[in-house]
Length: 399
Image (cartoon, rainbow, N blue to C red; front, side, top):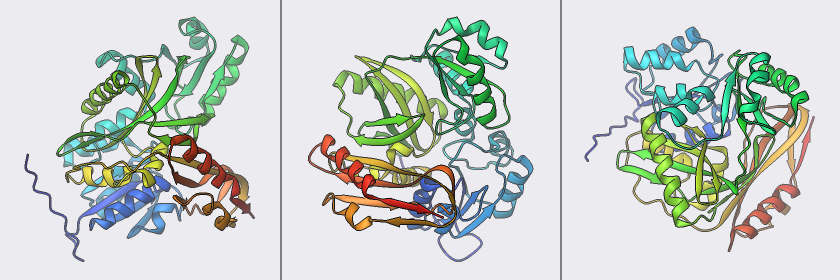
């Protein structure tokens, strides 16, 4: 199929523009890839000096959950592409503008709107697409949780219907945990919604991310990514996660169904539970995934390069996998704006095939991911060990 893609990189008002809604470490890499293809990038976030703002052509600070403010920014910049990079956005406004003003939202306003809400995406997967998921129910009151908890049993997991990076998520081990978990979910969820999802535990063998690309020349898959989480936030990821051919085919089939239902061009981080030969849907992000940072060392085209190509309507071609690789998130705890990274030389001596990405976050207040260590090696186990050793060598001082 032929596609006539034109990118105007001249210094004129007609230059191709992309508005990034969310300017963290993932948005920063997307911005760089778009700029390499001649796109003018405006980086937006709720705070100043976010990582993507440090490399973009222009920046804007505003509350992206404010519908009127979002409309004003879009009208001001008149972007050719609006690229949601986080969940805390007035996505219903994007849906309206896509329908009434032909706004180009990546991968689609529908995808952004559905996937930011656990209730919407779970209903799409379980009820419309009829794909396997964990047992679950939704609740808006503590009484509803008490009344329905037997549907999933103990232990189970409670999450806000809108949140990310494990915020507001907790494990309910017994009846006495319910009230505390509900209060946590309601106070840490996004969007001001006191509504939760309660999920039954899945006794999975492994949890994977299958990066799935929808592009002008078809559907593409990266090698499966395994990962380890703590409190809902990833610690290490590796590629490839070995799967049987049966499980891999099932995973690709399930991911394809979800991606096609959401629509649009871009990369999707499809999270799956593997239970023997069974594949169970967990969640999906219509954008690069944090566990996918490993692709910055494992592939010829990182997840960010793939996203940029796809959303612009450019072909993907072949994704070349370089070999077993791993990433380790570098986290720190502190309170301050003066962040110093030490011992980098020793960290980079751990492996001959290593890279380090310091995100450039301007401040830390509590617990925050500040960098990622990347390694490629002869096998996955060695790559993971080296990435973790790199992380352990890095000293972060916060003042």
